Image (cartoon, rainbow, N blue to C red; front, side):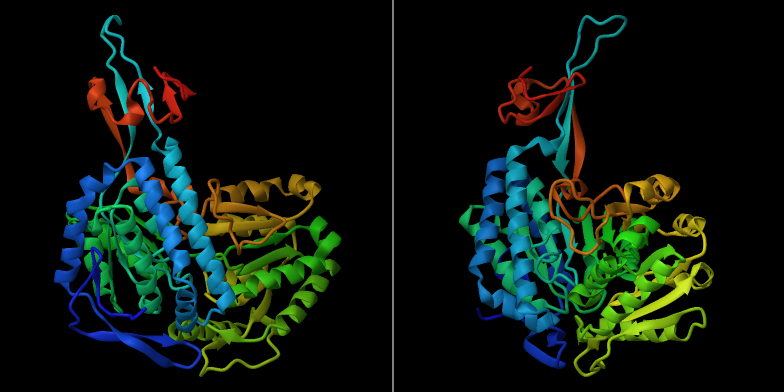
Length: 530
């Protein structure tokens, strides 16, 4: 496939003009062709106006039609073959098997949503039948369901060039509910985004969808993203990335003349608590698995475990020693791009300066700066050191973590109470541990979006039940997830119909329930007709 380098607006390629940038191979610093052009304000306006113009047509497509569109996206993504994988690998440093895993995740996710939207119960249809004879006032007939909000601005993530980007859950869930999408390709992997966009364009053409439901624009700096969020046609926006970037765009969305919802997933420290029973039974096993989780993907996951807490004991000392040995075995690997590599190495150097932190493990092989490689680092401190270094409770993107040796069980609960919102919290223990540390578990339920028992935060299951979110600063809105079918709820709003004739109601609210969706009828769930 010959790459173009311009904007894609409604399936058409824009003229090539303006400032340019390149994708870069992080392992060598080599610029990759072609040059990519910064989107102009006129191109952004054109893309969003086009999305706005097709919104009514797209939102009125049937669940079956949107399901066919999503299945076609999956098919067309598979048809891209190795070209997509090779470009993703070249732009991110990810090995080809990792890129293939991402591709498969995106394909399976599209098919998951295809089935979900066809089944249809996600609209949360509710019917309260009227009673004209009710005394002292007649009761109206009230019915409601979720409907799409309009064009969505989406930002591709740096660490998942396929699975959380053009083909990610943000895009797929927006399409599933009937919202057009304008996506800002991530500047670190513009070629990957351009190839992936062809799958969406081909699927729209194959299934007869309006071309304007999808556009993609490029921008290396902040201006393009801010313009997308500010544009009056944008109804909501979704972002995966840093706290600084997410917070800035959130404020842009909030400061508009008409504010819009802005859904940002911004990462977290994802603590692991190793309770005494588990430490005694399988401390060495947990140490190895923890380091495997820490170093997976060169530590470049928003669920990377940045803290591990346990109770002072001989077993803890053995655990620390074993984890440090495993860290020493990690061979440095290339990070996503030079900017992330610089932030990681700078953060590690700052931690080395702290008298409260002790470096207990690091990769035995030196990392290459020229190849943007990251070594793995493991620090250790105590509860007092953790309190004196609040930055330890903040995400440092990359393969680095800190072990916290607690003197008393209460130290763990005290830390949990100070913990900012986190995407995950993991607990390793026995059933007896859970009873004895019930207070800790109760605190964690209020702090994290996903509680993991005897497991690790990296590697989440894309399914109906998953929640990938958490209280601020993990996300802007703790009620919503950015992964799994429930993420469709970000791009819809409830619309209520009072005393409307059957002929004018949406199918999901008609008496006969022609789509056989699950509804709440006078307070009870049923698929029956009225």
